[in-house]
Length: 500
Image (cartoon, rainbow, N blue to C red; front, side, top):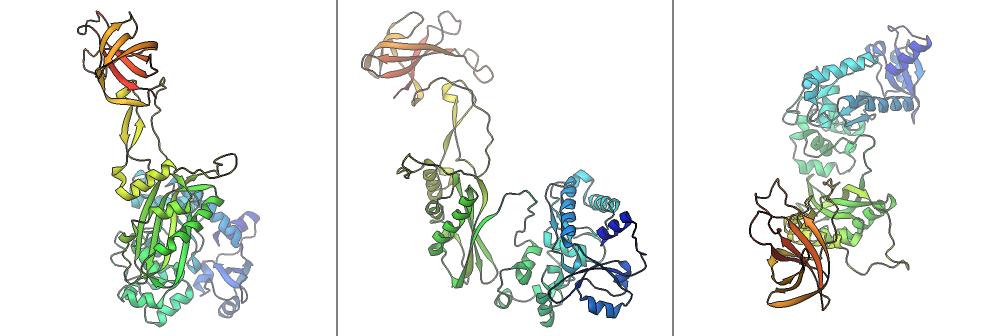
């Protein structure tokens, strides 16, 4: 209504504020009231009511056509404008007769505005400068804030709304009108009346999975027992596959392959791969059981994804059974299709990432490690054991470029006995593990200086050589120290690696 009033002010067609004015939208059974001004509200005109009924109640009612599409576009622009307070903002155009609004997840940002009360006052003031009146409320959950802004007497915060929701009417649960009417006919006027009933009896009466038709779902969202995250515009798409069963079951295993195929079809259409998976079962008593799995690299292989849950299904408590199973991929990454060979055939070998996922699913995440590069020129410090790749973007310091390294590096360099050495070169003949080797050719040296910031004083530099003996064996040797370097006796020789 305020947007229409601002447009009238710009065009010079302002109507007197003391005359009842309403915006009318077309509906299935004739025009209905879309929005009203203050005078029409005092006269008893109600949004959502039929225009014919309201004209009988208020004969002086003036009407103009509503613009729902324009209202929605304005609300979307306001949601982007509200990101000045926090990045997680979303428009809520489906406010029903209570009016549309904005939802802001201010977790971690209220201190930037002087606290919660100061932030609410700033939001109302800034909206007032734009010509919009607002009633702000702060609560731990989306549903609680929605209810407080529309039904609570006065304004302010409600940090304990999940502990005492009794004073609020059942309409504060964001339910459709027919559901609210049904609850009222059953004698359930307040949320406290609804929360006092056994959940099992309500679950038998309300079985619809739509939140606006199921008061149990809305009650759990309001109290925080069911997550309802704020997904702002521009967030990645939600990849989810649901399976509704004709009767409750206790084991989701037989239905898991079908869910994985449906989810992978959606991922393939968007050219994405799953990095993290969540399997949820919705029990008949209203409770929800969840288990999660992760992939080392993006994947949309149905058989592989189903295997990740094979040894975890026993962690789900089926209760009295469940009739709805959902498989979603909350974390995904782009995954373009690839061709294994020129003939288009599949790779017969097992992908390394699949092997990591299977070992992690079998033995746990801490039992599987990988070698991660470390920014060091000293060979034994150039790599470190780390956990498998997490499900999400990985940021790491770039490792320095290094020369060719042997495929097999000894855990500790082994000292060798030099029988004859070339000046400023490698040994012409050396003995290692009671066997003599005669060097036929060599390459080097590659000098590696000690790292002064972590090595002990007196650490000697190394000169590495790649050598090949008369039988074709290739070794990686280094000379520890130089003659007359003042850091000990004569140089010592060590074997550090073996080339394939």
